[in-house]
Length: 508
Image 1 (tube, rainbow, N blue to C red):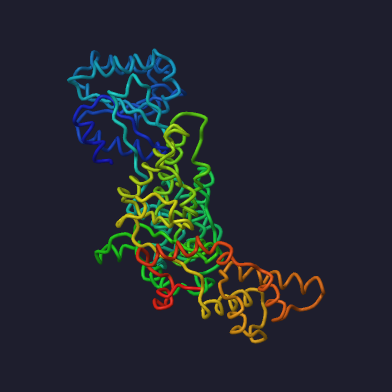
Image 2: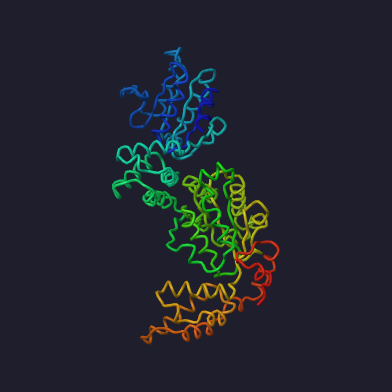
């Protein structure tokens, strides 16, 4: 982007809109561009200081506090000093003044007067607001956040100040840098200092402290939710094929993977029977890969208060996810989030269709390392565009657990509740819970514990069996839906269970 900005200035573009919240970094970048041409000067305008020359003692140009006067002063410089008509004028936070027609008129006059000169106006603001009068005249650029090289300079500086620069391994340095990706330079400096103050050091162990700063970014966004999961992937019973696939890609976002020639994973779709661990897999993958997990709440995206607001909400959410990448973007129950998007133009003015189209375009064209992990229960509600090859790296089907997997699930939940697994006959429990999902097994176990707790005694094997027999599993109450999902997945999805033979039978 810095190269693009340099080209636009050299190509005599009179009006550039630079979207950024990092004023200091952006000013330094513009000053570097100005140095490429002898005698090119940079002036900075703010509503508090007026027009001031960058890098010089605070010498305010008289009567330039108002935006109209500042623009007029910039226009007239070529008359005063024709040999130096290659200046760059930075206007900070001018967008609130666009409601005044005089401001937009002065800008259009400036654009006309700058033709044939090397002068440029750069509007710098964290908010992109362009009046319709300037849409054909302005070029909009997003100033990028610091890359690995810039963050490395920040980290090196902090390590030298702490006197521990030699004690950080290459691998630890990379993890600290990746944890800070998506932060501004100032945010990175502050969180590295925070880690040093908190732990008295800056090593791989302080990565979580650095990641905590990203939580603040997500909290301010309002549409994304930062999810923290204490469970590891070992808490998921069965699904060995899916686990293997995820473990193979645990280092897929490292520089070593790029040097090897591997492309960055795009995403995965997990279909299956409700309660079989789809959401838990998504959450535990975050810990397995060491990446932040962001849940996209489509309910918060839709906003009917203003035309175009919903689309802007989605763009902002995706932009935030990209800014803190590498990250996992989790969309739970994708079938509900985008159900009916193809035929909703009449009911909501086409908002759902536009949001769906924007999301598909982003998935197809994104280059940032944002891994989309989606789950769905009702495949017939999913738009066909989601299921075509190439949209996701893989589509997995999570079926009801078989007898061996049910034993493992019972073992996991009994262990979690600090019970001696040897006291229970897991084989018998697996047999009586045939057709149960993992969530239903857990709830049966909880029901047994409540029954025994009310009687002030320890729960037993018989309590669990009684709770199981009192439960009607989803596989029986919704047999047709489960059968239809299995029939669809048999030829179109990859089994999440290790036993392909068990998956191929898929019969009650």
